[in-house]
Amino acid sequence: MADIYLGTSDSGLTPLPPIRWTDGGNPAMPLDYSKQFEEARMLSGGIRINCKSVHPRTWEHSWEMLTAAEFAVFTALNALNQALYYQNNWEDAVWRMVFIKSFKPEPALKLGPTVCRWNLTINLLEVR
Figure (cartoon, rainbow, N blue to C red):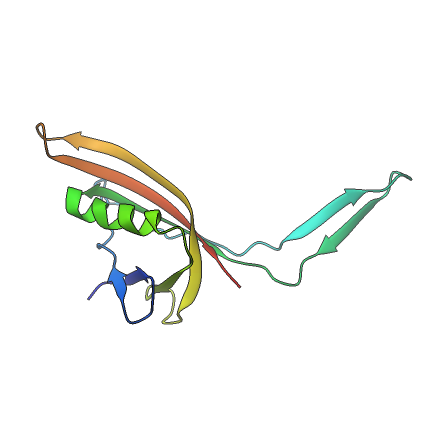
C-alpha cells in the first residue's frame, strides 16, 4: 500500500510511487506552515502588517530514479491543472485539496535510446 495519494477524487486517486533515495539518507518531507501576511509602508514611514486569517500549507516531495512509467503518472497529474485530492499517510490520514505549485523533473540516467530514469521534485499548495 502506498503512503501518498494524489488524484482527481478521493475514490479515483493515484497511489504515488514509493519514495526512493539513492544515497541511502533518511526520508525528509518538508511541510511549510508559515504565516501569511501583507506588509505595507505608510507615507509616514511606518510599517503596517495585515496577518491573513488563512495560512495554507505547502509540501515538497522528491523522488529519485523514477521509471518512465512512474514519471508518466506525475506528468499526467501535472497536466490536469486543477485542484487535486491529497493524502499523506506519513503525516496523517486527512484528505486535503492541493494544487501542484511547482513541477521540477530532471533526467538522472540515460539507459539507451528509449529508457531514462528521472528525478522529480514537486511542491503542493493547500487550497482552503
